Image (cartoon, rainbow, N blue to C red):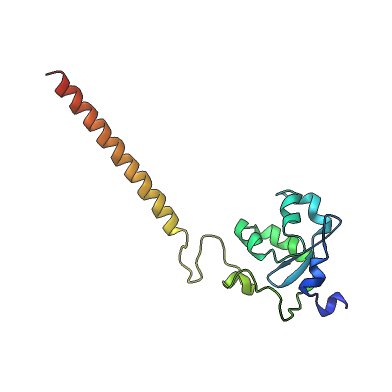
Length: 146
């Protein structure tokens, strides 16, 4: 079968060594063999997902636009899904090939706002706890001196 027709999961699975390494990301097949030694995260990261669907691993890291451009240069074709193939790892917009910028939800709002708010509340709580500690420490020093 030519790669132009698409590769199946079983085809991709046979390419799982450092000298012959394919990945599936968003139902597209990539030959990352030439990139293994250049990967900033190390070769082990790629070898761990070699011959498999690496969509979730790729998206969890939050790759840059430059990394996505490099990935496009490594594309060999589309994945040809067959009955019995594993389901895509992510059913979100990322699995459909739509990529949103980190920190933004699909609705256009700040998706990171909740995370920042959490840290702000933790910081505020820590400040209040420290203030209460200092207040009690000052008052107990005054009580002991009487």
